[in-house]
Length: 214
Ligand code: MN
Image 1 (cartoon, helix red, strand yellow):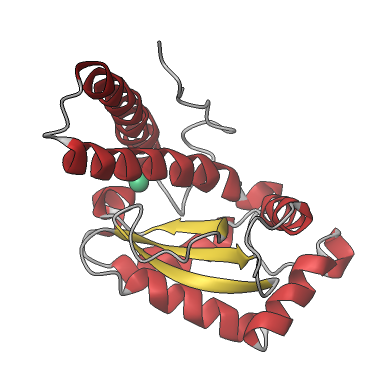
Image 2 (tube, helix red, strand yellow):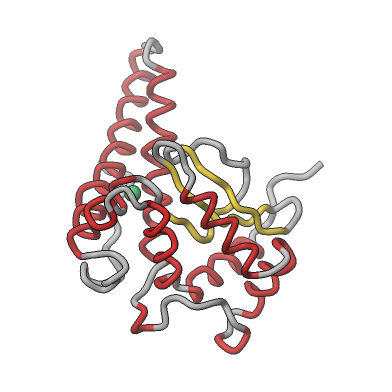
């Protein structure tokens, strides 16, 4: 029985043009994201089998696969919702006038200014080595926002941090359109950020009870 399922895209394949072309969105969602969902489900089945048979020879690989596929599923599920069409208000900066003043204030408090935050997330995303992500996350101990440079889908992450805005910097996210110009893709991404969605995630993260205390 499948535990995880592939979510529907919140828009059609062409909705993010010209920033991301429809062919990339279709392959990225229908093939790549789907593979992470299947991978997470398959790995859970294999772990169940290992428990039943008490055969632990593959435990290291299975635990790594679980972290990889599950994190891939989670990050892509956030990614699709973090974007919307420039025609429908995607892009720009979070502004109090748009009802996202809390997020704007948190960005300023945590990074000094929106421009400094934008520069850090752009740089962190564009300079990923191999495959990875640039992530804006809520860090529950400090109550501040941080930028993380994630390796693959799961490495280099501060435990307990909650991703609220994610830039996919894997080659599959841009290569068909941007070729080797990863920095151009990341800079264009700012034109489709859905700040309403980011703010919704920020509010939910802030409201959740921190499970970490000293
Ligand atoms: Mn991806």
